[in-house]
Amino acid sequence: MIKETMYKLATGIYLFAVVVVLNSFPSDACAKDKQVKATKGPVVVATAKTPPSNDGLPMPGFIIDNKNTALVLTDPQNDFLSEKGVAWGVVSKSVTENGTIENIESLLKVADETGLPVFISPHYYFPHDHKWKFEGTLEVLMHKIAMYDRPGQLNLSKFDKSGSDWVESYKPYINNGRTVVTSPHKIYGPEQNDLVLQLRKRGIDKVILGGMSANLCVESHMRELIEQGFEVMVVTDATAAAITEHYNGYEAALVNFRMIASKIDNTENTVKAIRAAYK
Image (cartoon, rainbow, N blue to C red; front, top):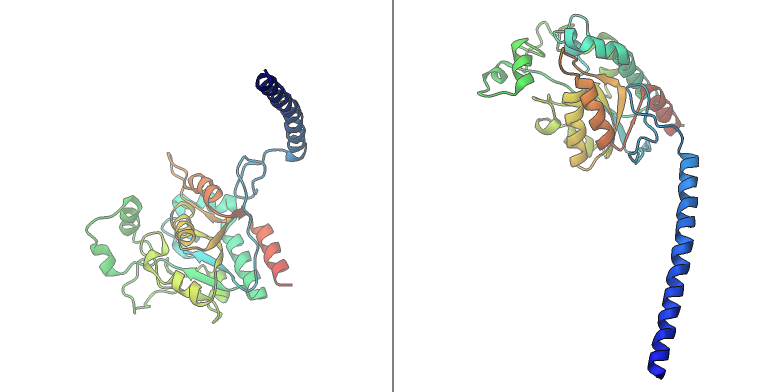
């Protein structure tokens, strides 16, 4: 009898405690939910010019450190960024809408003014590169239109103002004796050049990334650098991509920038952040 009474008493106390917890939990949850809704604000989906907010994805963030951060630009060359370039017909819409040419120059200019290290990962094809036995879709196209073609690794004949040369307005910044120009990458990523080596040798582990083209070399550099342990942010209007009748390379890249990089932002905000880091 005593054991039965004690059992009923214990059971009653337990059920009472459960009821108290259950009654208090929903009100707590509702309060927190209301607080979240009150501070959430409107949903802003990323575009080239607009950084995202409240889009359902976390934004880890990226703090520019003047000791270990660098600007990395892929392919700031005429074949992509000049009206005379062989790829201009398919990239011009994206380049123009994003203001890519001017925005890359803004990044180079602020880097030059502040001392932010700059690394260029260029693209060149030499005669032996045209003897590959198999190629991907756009490798075939680039080789077919002689994109970034050079007569030889040690041959600079007709290089000035060619498709392989830097955009003219970038030259004062790239040829300033401080900018690091790596060996060329051959397909899209930096796996075949010395970018990672050069960054490590300079103590860099944070990268601000831009250049051409968004869904090819920029995205491939972003992925490989992240795999190599670098923290990466992408400047979304300092890049652009091919837009064809059926495919939009920039939209494809923007989704992946948002989902993979620590941060994405526009040039204006990035320039301000670089200046603030070097005050």
